[in-house]
Image (tube, rainbow, N blue to C red):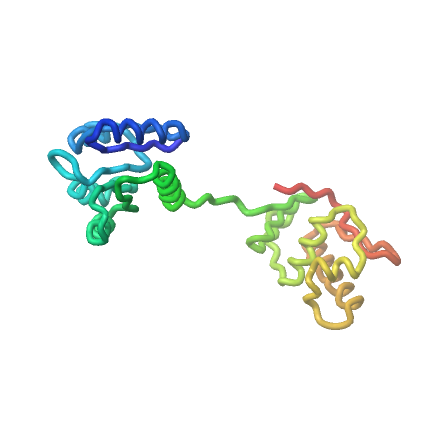
Length: 230
């Protein structure tokens, strides 16, 4: 749940914003001025600040400028809605600027857009296939033998192995293998597939493994190992 601090001196406006955002699953706290904000922010993490420009004491522009290097993103609110005012707010570090009066649905949409932009990218571990002690990570073109030895592969071998690990225990005809590997090899397709399978089989066997690719006479090839995907 994203945490939002609303800095707005008008009690009715502040209460309306806090109530509306709270109903949309945000953790929201409202304060009336910069001094109250400083006291709250000193021990409170926030993901976004909704900040009114016209505040008693230190105004919103000054507070935004003071916080620009350390604060979470700021969405500024102001009855001063001309272009110059918006430019000033954005230039001092605000992530967005919304003129009053506004539809609360637009405020919600802008908040969500800011939070999406500010969210750190989600990193996923590379997709991996495991079979007979082998580790195959096609996204980063890595193949590790059961003894831990990295095995270099050509692009054609990588595509062929990927076709097999995606369809373990299935008999794949030459036509099907050609489709799965995008027909990347030159030459008549029967011969090209046979050569590609032979090279891959040799690559896997050279590292001390057993023959993982079985020839099914008259039908095609089958990957014999059980494969798990993680």
